[in-house]
Amino acid sequence: MDVRETVSNQTDVALSLTKHLLQTHGKDSNVVFSPSSIHVVLSLIAAGSKGSTLDQLLSFLKFKSSDHLNSFASELVAVVLADGTSAGGPRLSFANGAWVERSLPLKSSFQQVVENTYKATVNQVDFQTKAAEVTGVVNSWAEKETNGLIKEVLPSGSVDSTTKLIFANALYFKGAWSEQFDASKTKDNDFHLLNGSSVKVPFMTSKKKQVVGAYDGVKVLALPYKQGEDRRRFSMYFFLPDAKDGLPALVEKMGSESGFLERHLPRQQVEVGDFMIPKFKISFGFEASDTLKGLGLVLPFSGEGGLTEMVDSPVGALLLAVFSIQREVWLPSPRDWLKLNCDVRVGSESSCIAVVAKNHSSEVVWANTARLDFSDACCGEAAACCLALETAKRAQGAQVHHRRK
Image (cartoon, rainbow, N blue to C red; front, side):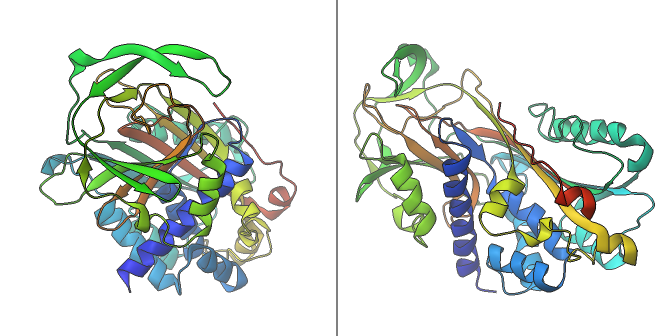
């Protein structure tokens, strides 16, 4: 397995998702999501698929085989997304869970992949008579795994007696900046909105050098997180287009040009003068299956019998289809955390996209797009992703849920 090529491919997939999501669900709002969470959920679907459904999933995720996909997912879960707290690095909690209708046992081969490769806990539940209770159990699980930030990943009514399996993923990330800001120098200033108005918000300030690079039509800022003894290096990158309304064009380019991210990562510190960072938080939820189908990934949702490698029941397997993939992301705003600023000049109007990546691999952990004068992000994130598989009859006639907070 060529690790560099694989990581580059996954970055391209993440940015393609970012592009489509901004164009469809984020035209008038901030957007944040975790590509890693969606990748793991789709990998789980692929592990239980065969035929044309499996081929479409592998093509979408840019993998040559299921073994290749599972090998990469195993490394992603065990290494990239492993908690670094004990080594002095960022706190990372990346948990997977599975809730299975008790009358449909999982195939032993699939259960082995779920438990050993994806480190998911498998729970037998009663969807037929206790669907509402299962919803509460999954939401409580997500709340626990995201440190209380996400309380509802499954909306009321999204699970009923036709539900057969739920796969859930929860990500919690919290890191300290390698260069801390002096809290005593935080001060209120004008935050300019694209509609021409402004509001007073607290800004953190600095006069230190920053890792900034200037490229064709875009400036890029890198804010490194404190590194632990395990030597993993995480940074947050902010991409600021030169044109104040240039975010759509920038996202279009990022999502269309392979290798764009790797070619636009600054390495050197430079003088930037006054550096000001506004504080705030974002909560965003969306129905990911709508986005995925818009990108051509349709067979897992079709109910055409491709998900046959999950449950040990010929009839039940033929009826399975993906009904819903719920995504909920919350970016917290503690008082003493750095938030962001894509532009070092007060008063300039701009939009930007921010991504968190490992410096040496560029694996995207999460992505954020902001359509404000000073765009927004933070050094912590919580995300939860929930996949529901139901009988094909309901899946084919379902209305897609789309929620935004």
